[in-house]
Structures are given as C-alpha cells and as structure tokens.
Image 1 (cartoon, one colour):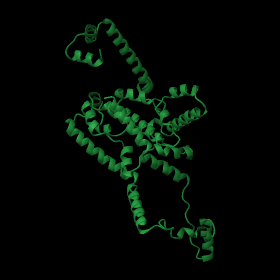
Image 2: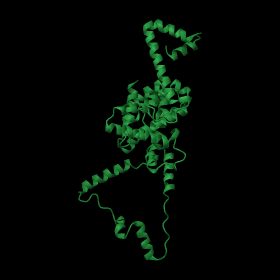
Image 3: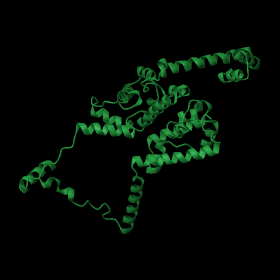
Image 4: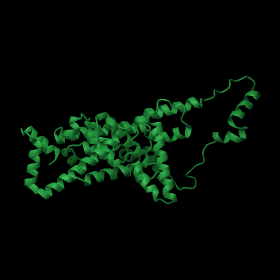
Length: 350
C-alpha cells in the first residue's frame, strides 16, 4: 500500500500501520498480485532514491543542474524546498530559452549527460556535432551561471561567451553583462573643437571614416518605399506598416509588466473558482507561493497544483511568458511552441 494510506492508518490510531496496510493489501489483491505491487513499489522507491541522489547529493541541491534530465528534475520537485524548486524552475526557463535559439536541438536539451553519452556512442557525424554543441552549451551555462545565478566576477569570461549568455540572463543579469562589456570598451570622448575650421573638419573626417563623400548620404532622406504605387496601394501598404509597428511597439520590460498583470488576474479568478484551493497538499506544506503555479514550466506547475486548479486550467489555460509575448507581437516563436506542447502533455495526463 502507498505511503499516504499508511499515514492515514497511523492518524486513525493503528499501532503498526505498515503491517496493517500490508495485511489489507493482501486481502484486497491476493498474495501474488500484492507481491507484484510491492515489488513495483520498491522499484519505484529505488528509482526515486536514485533521482534524489543525483539531484540532491549529500542532501544539498546540485550546484550544476544542466546535466540532469527534465524527467529527473520533474520527479524530484515534490521533495525540494521552495528555494530549491525556484532554482529548478530557473534552469527550466533557461532550457526554454535555449530551445528557441537557432542551431540548438530541442530534443537534446531535456536529456541527461548520461543519455547524451549513450547517444554519442552510435551517432553519425551530424548527430555527433549536435551532441557536442549541446554539451558545449551546458558547459557555458554552468560556468556563467554557477549555482543558477550569474557569476559574481565576469572579468575572466570571454566576450563570445558573454554574448551567448545574454539569451539566458534575467533583466538584472543582462544589465550586469552589458556593464561588463561597457567596462571593456568604454566610449571614447569626442575631441574638443580647436577653433580652426579646417583642423576640426579633418578631425571629424577621420572619426567618421573619410571625407563627406563617404558619409554625407546618411543625412539624405530615405527613398520612398511606396514609389510607383497607386494611391489605393499606398494606403493599404501604410496601414499594414502601422499595424506591424503597433505589434512591435512594446519593450520587453513593458511586455513583462503586462504579463504580470495578466497573471494577477488569472490568480484572482482561479482563487474564486476553487475557493482558494490552488496548491496540492504537499506544495502547501512546503510553503510554495501560489503565484509560481501560473508562470514557468508546465510540468513544475502541474506537479504542485491542486486537482481543482488543474480542472480549472482545462477551461482557462495557463499561459507562459513566451506564449503571452507571442500574443503581443503577433508572431509565433519556438519557445511558445515548446510551452504549448508542454502544457498539452501535462493536460493529457489528467
């Protein structure tokens, strides 16, 4: 019988709840069937111990999560603290970001280092190159984000690595990377005017890269993109350009702020629909913030959500930042597709 049933018997006053649960199990299913169930339970418990030894070696969350599979991170969530769960969620966010980058194989991102090693043993040239690129990506993330956060000292990190790391950085971390690049390449002040027109002109020519013939075109009016169109065609083209500009008129910070407002509305609606029953019993005992259920990876949210909330999500689908950003800009992205598939996979398990 399961641990929950044993705990229930203990609460009801059983002197030896394990033995009583075993006796009930044998009576219910018969000795052979119960033995099979018991073995399956032992195998499951052994697998869970293996996962936890990998995710929390020595009782502490591993410093580098990049080599642990999506499956194992998902299995371990129920036994992690709130802070540890937040670190796992941050790693999954980085994986979602990687899946949207050109040249990255999404099917390799969620596999463990061991699984990649087994695939490498039988891989051809193109597959070997893809696996090697994924291992290089993980090494970069582990070095630049030790313990899940941007390294304190970036002075020894080469500029190519810093550029790649921007795709995985939070806004505050991106600002730190930009500051490091500014430190390495400080802007050069313009020379002061000397009062000699010819000398000042020669100085500006040198800064701008030659005589005015080489750069004066920058001051010219741009060519008319609608040249040759009829008045009707011009009107249609201008309206399409205005609509496109409106979709892209928001900064990433503004989109994130709009997304936070969307999440706040979702949380309030869900609380009313479920009478405040948003978290599973285990997540509630761990002190999980209910807001975290409405952002981040789907498998993390569904692992911590109550059954009432899961049912509510069937009619009111949760939306990740990637999906919300798609709605704002009007263009589908690889990250949005990944988020939709992950949500669909979780809902199909209900």
